Image 1 (cartoon, rainbow, N blue to C red):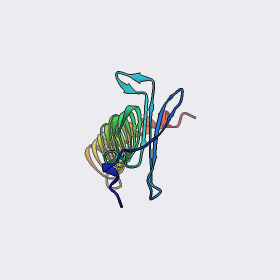
Image 2: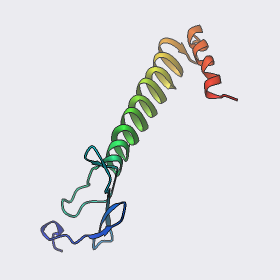
Image 3: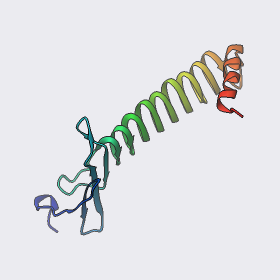
Length: 174
């Protein structure tokens, strides 16, 4: 079997009014797809999507764009297994404002392990305001909590009870 990395790669290029698709089908049936929009913002494409292993490099391409979607994604809104962005969604989601994923960080974070600066929601959560199974923070609502004002199965700090009860009309406005 020949080494595809040593050969010229012939992509199927499809130009649309929104952007360019670059596709490749491996002899094994595996596929590589990449889409980059024509429109850009600060030099980044508005949309960048990647799927599969690039035949030129033999590696995955990091999706980089205002909206980035791929196994590895970096952007304003980053969606991928490992993602970094202003808003990040994925198994490992490192968000500046918001992270949503199994392991998530950000000013607000939600996930199994949620490390939030201001708000954390998850099984293991941190933040100024924390809701979780195991939580650390200033105001903590958790099965087992640690912090200044904790409402848990073993204690009910009056300040924590008042704080979380005051949020009920915000969360349930009916």
